[in-house]
Length: 591
Image 1 (cartoon, rainbow, N blue to C red):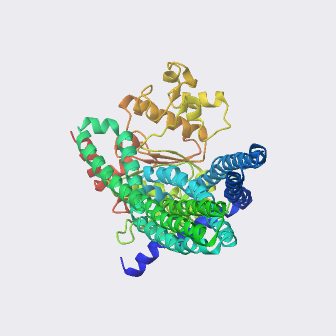
Image 2 (cartoon, rainbow, N blue to C red):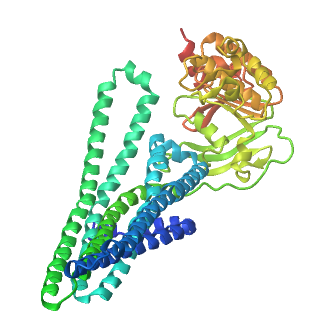
């Protein structure tokens, strides 16, 4: 990293710091109330030394005169002083409550809502290349740290600078000679704070980046826990986790060290000012006749002046900690959103799908689909087959608008799909993926995921069509049994049948099955075929499969090879050609 970059990185209020302040701006009403509390607290802090100084002067005068009525003369001042202490305690509690329970929580909730909305607008490619654990870490831990920035900026920095300014004025009004050493050392304290706090920022950046990686590793490990156990991968996983954890710990230690060392250094500088005031005050008492109460007041004010300096020192180190989290959150918020036109589907969808001269690649330097053309008539059952990497699942991604094509057109009933909103486009398709997905909820809720207004009768009918009603009714609570992706109450094949029932219930004109029978046994596969035959009437269906036995009755089979259609036809006609499809079929069933 070049020198200018380092300077930019260690600045307290660089672009990230300024943006943090802008993010807090919508809370300015609450912050103004907090600032008012701070001013009242400063008033209390100023009044306390003054009142105490007067009481000491009154006590000193009594030691010289021994006049009666000392208690009567001190009680009013003591009562006022106690009242100021009580008011300060109440204001401190109120300010802390307001910042932590109102402002910070409101800020935190609003930021998480914005992140959730942002993720909804990001392309699927972002989630494909980003570990889920890292996204979760940004939405939870990093946002929580940013919410705490409200407390740090308002309570620590704002109140600290306000208190310093007020006390500095009072110090000069009380005795300018004792005020000079206190005020002159303040800029040195602040410069040291800012400089040392900035040194810790790079360590906090690394700390939070490694925290995201740790969350991702833990999420992957427990999501695939049976695989880890089956291959005895616990030790390798433990070593990887230990390595990341150690690096995470070290970066945190360095960050905390550089942040925490600020306060002792500032406390030392403040102590010098405190000693200077005490020594100078003693000299003024002896040689200039300054009252003892005035010197005590100045010493107390010097101590009050050092308190905000120490808070500011802590705040500067704390802000660097928060900025590291903010960078990760802002990076996510600033990602470019995928364009989404506002076109809607008009009239009934018949289900004709055309791909005209379609080009696409995940990596621009590695072309995948080139000049792909196909014309699917309404109601056809179309099978897409080919070796791994030929582009079968990619076609599904393009039809569903998970990815946008590089060139060409995809037409649905003659209308360019690129002109439809993504929600409208996806609302035309029901989809069953190779990997089942069930959320934690009842069986009925899982089946009705794509059709939240469906009745229980419709849910049960869809399950009957998908041949899963019989095993659902054997569950402990039937359709009200709570299941999830990790549930052992239903087998892998039964989970797949539930996702097929979900697609059946959605009742959309286009249907996609991406390796839908890969996780089921032969008997279940036959049941699925029967269920799909019931659904096929008047609907266009795309079936992607490696097991060619599942698509022998397809109206049209498209054989992909290197991103292009190598052959097309029915099962019998393709076997008769004895081309690439014949070789694929023979490789599976030659025995």
